[in-house]
Image (tube, rainbow, N blue to C red; front, side, top):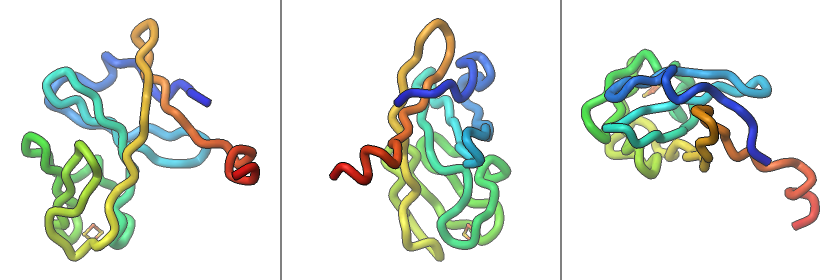
Length: 109
Ligand code: FES
């Protein structure tokens, strides 16, 4: 299921911004025109990652400076140990639609 998260022009190239969908916070990064959608909160202690810093593909958490690779959510260095979830999306008519897994598909596995 794909749901609208934001408009693509809400996140200019080289920037990142947080959005909420169904009570969950997501981070959208626009790296040279390529979008990346990740969890909005750090896996270490829940810092808002939109307040962190971005250096090309590397996102640094604002609280304890864990660094994540935005292309796959992996941890470059801690204290965080768990990677960020990376979400699939589609772009349609200037809107970024996020793929959300439904509980229904979870129960049918
Ligand atoms: S909350 Fe992100 S490194 Fe601690």
